[in-house]
Length: 97
Image: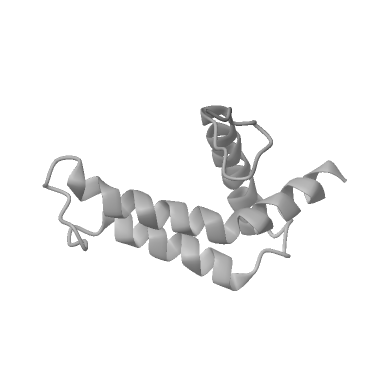
């Protein structure tokens, strides 16, 4: 069996998830204050629509179904993250300079 490498594409650790959540919070703060203006509108729209989908009571699979109801929410969050990951990386590099 092949062992997963932490640098391999597709490998997601809990540490990476927590770091990206902190990075996202910092990004939103900098966008709101006007410090960072390079974040595209489509990415903000994707995050807003993802948030609305998660809090909306009517989903593709209803949330009242245990475990199964959260799968579609998780899939939407993963898709949003996949779409904005490159923009998060650009912001991370911008923070370093």
